[in-house]
Length: 472
Ligand code: ADP
Image 1 (cartoon, helix red, strand yellow):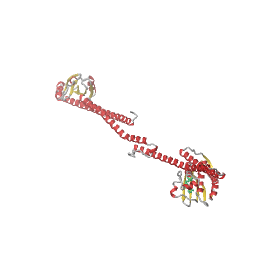
Image 2 (cartoon, protein in one colour):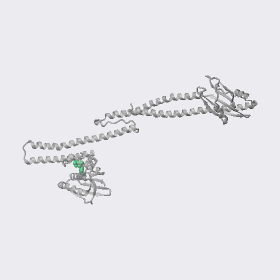
Image 3 (spheres, helix red, strand yellow):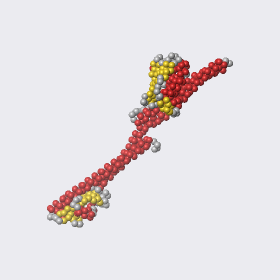
Image 4 (cartoon, helix red, strand yellow):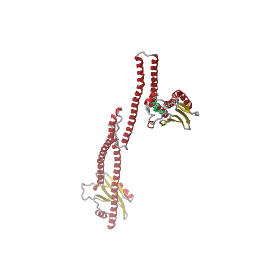
């Protein structure tokens, strides 16, 4: 049960709310209790002062006869529900309890005997002294004692009142708390549970929906009720993740489809050639011709598979950069040397502009591949009589390699796509030239993996320029 977030949230909510409610209730009860006790004390202190003033005037009026003054004080000062007693030097002059007019139950206050300690305290200090006596009544009683000195004699007057009413008030307050707090907790728990259910209901819907998504229906998305709340944001992020997954799945699917398609043609040629060659007895020259075609296609296949492998490793992040110090100008000379034969065969002039020594820390094998792919393309797509110009330059923070040709150029709408895998502007021409549409994606990947990029500017019919920038 506690594995449910809803239950845990509700329990925490009720616990915290209950603790706060209890703290608040306790504090409120303590404040109210202190208040009712203080008002009873104040009322008793006032009453004892009034009684003392009354007694003093009765003494003056009655020639300082304490017995007559006491009797008159009782007649005059007869507060209902209070007990009044007058002491003089250890002797009780009189004590009386004044029944309230509609008393519901008899009071035991008339039997009250104030303890000697309060009399002594009152005589010691002329201010009202207060004391609680518990054993007289059910809730005890509270008394106030005040001393006065009249005609050389000390008198102590005690006023007492039952605490029944005060305690009854506090008792009903406690009862209210004991009823209200559990009721409030119950309501809060229920409200919390419903609230948690409402908020988490959305998660349940999302979970159900997410469970239904697999490789075949990656286009499905989670419902987003409010994109600005937490759950909405979670659904959005999840949907973005799905979009990225869908994109890479599509890429993989496309790559597989394109790769199979690319592999099919050379394999079909090899098989066709072999079938034709083996179909009947042929001359040595014919066999040689067939084998040359098969060799050519096998070479093409090897390159294709190499390129696919390179990109697959790049995707998997499995190809670690093997950075080493190298002179890019030397590497460029090497690569130009490698394509020079092809260039002269095509009737294209390969022009490598002189450059200073350019020291760079990079992966020699990958950089060689980058340069060869660019040079190979430039030569392939430049008609006889054209020029390919290669230039290497450097600044403090970047190295720039540009390969410019005066070839067929690339139409503006294809400029953004030539770096995509298997994309070719003219499929037939590319195939005839031995291309597979993976050369430029590899160039882009090598540049990016070195922290750089490659930019293409091209004018159809005029030529193309590929500029690779590598940060130092
Ligand atoms: P390919 O193996 O077909 O050359 P690439 O990825 O190297 O594949 O190039 C993709 C396409 O871009 C080519 O098929 C070609 O249409 C175009 N392209 C690349 N380089 C050049 C260039 N220098 N001049 C004209 N077109 C080019």
